[in-house]
Structures are given as structure tokens and as C-alpha cells.
Image (cartoon, rainbow, N blue to C red; front, side):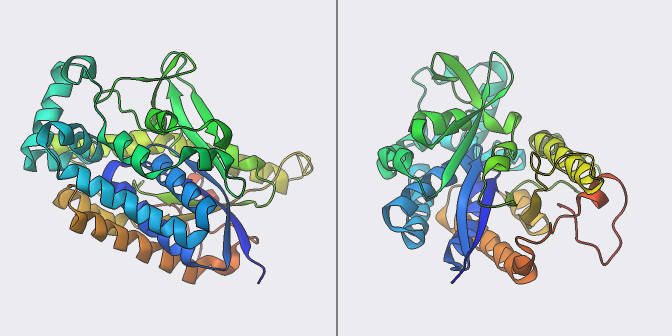
Length: 351
């Protein structure tokens, strides 16, 4: 069977990473696809590292098992003693502040982050997510992985620029740098430089995937919806929408650049030997995720499993509708997104 090669771009999003887990589970199950590269930030970086280690160890089925074990480990960490789980809950719920009203531990962490830095309220820099990664992932295997190229984004605190870490250098510290929200965790030092969450500068970064010669197809697994009807009114709703806009800004900028280059190529203004028209696809179910986010975020395995099922269903629907387009055309209408309202029969933009 001739499999279709793809690159994956995985957004961060705290507990919404379980949605990404579901989408990846369905993609890994499809024998018609071959994952050549993954770009990820924050929770997307965690999923990328876990997947690559499992894939190197035993192929797609092992990668699926590893992803399940990781998210079950996240749920287990959330059930442990309150002091240990508070940073975990704060991270997982930082992208959906509505839930802060519903959980005293998360409320404590949120209040603490507003009046003190993590150097004050978390002096030991405890991070249960790092413990889960260290227990599950063999990073020597990740560094040796040649089947899937990894591009893990983190934000250099001093320069404000993104840095991309690749397979050969990856450790759990690099993944935690990509997932380091500065209100909750101390900056992670890599090669003497401090790093914060990669989502600020690339959520996820698309540009590293331009050089993956085996494929032009970039499949974005998007946890944060771009559009949401109506203006938020409560403080929590405003904070949640602000987060969505902030963490989608870099993605929109890169998509605009891809669209610009594609138009110049169509006009024969740029040499095709030097530039390539990238084919953009999106696995998104913003409408389904919205009530889940508003209804409450937690580390309970039942809730994470619900997100998993939503992500898996979204990937199933995307494959059914767009598999034939892989290698042929984009299924995201960037022209409609940036320059005009799409007609009903045009490909839908990112949502």
C-alpha cells in the first residue's frame, strides 16, 4: 500500500491536549497515512514526544498505547496529594479560566499567580507533568527516532523569539520549556537561556515543516477555536477568550504568510524550485469543544476520555471528507479566511 505522507502541527491547550490525543489516535490507526514530521508546543509538544517514542519503539500501535498511558498518568497525577496536584491543575485549566470558579485548588493557584510569582509560591518548581514524562518516555529513544522529525517550540524569554528544538537534542526539560506558563512555573533554562511556553510565539510553529521534503501536507490539530459568537461578559469569559485569541495569533500570522507565498507562486512571481506551495488541512471541532470547556475542566479520566472521543470523532470526520485531497490541494480556504467571505460550496476556513 502506498501511504500518504503528512506533517502534523499540534496546538497546546492544557487539558485540551486530550482532544489532540484523540485525533492522533485515529490518525495513527489509519494505515493509509504516514507521519513524517510533527511540530508541537506545550501540550502539543508532550503529545509529539510521547508519540515519537512509542512509534520508534513499536510503530503506530505502540504510539497509541503510549499516548493513552500518558494521559492516564496525567489523570493519576491529578488524584494525588493536593500540594503536588495544584500546579498540574493550574496548568491544565489555565487555558479555560471558567473552571477556576468550580475548583478550590485551581482557584488558589490562580489567586497565587496574581499576587506572587512561581519563584515565591512554587520555590521547589514542582511540576507533576515532568514526573509523568520522565516515568513514561525514554528520551534516548526520542533522540534516536529517525522515522518522525520533531520540532518542539519554546519562547526565549530574553529575545522574545521562538526556538525550535529537534529530535537529537530533546530531553524532558525541552518539553517542559515548551509548556512553561510563566505565571505557574519558573522559566526552564536550556543552554543557559530561559524559556517559556512555545504557544506565545508558535502555537504550533508551521515554518519548520516547510523543509520536510517528503510532503507538502500540513495537518493542524487545533484545540483553540478561532471564532466564537458574541462578546464575553464575565471576567472569566473575557479571560478565556483573550487566551484563545492570544494563542491563535501566531498561527494566523503563519497561515497568512503561507497564503501570500501561494498567491505569488500562482502568479509565477516566485521560483518554484526555491519555494513550495504548502497544502493546509485542519482537524478542528471548536463547536463541540466549546460546551466542554464551559462546563468544567478537570483531570478526571472520564473527562479526559470525553475530550479524547471528541478529537477522535473530529479526525474521523476529517478523514472521511478530505483524505482524497491529501497531496492534491488544501482543504482550508486561506483566500476566504483572509480576503473574502467563503461561498457555501468552498472549503471551510479554520474555526
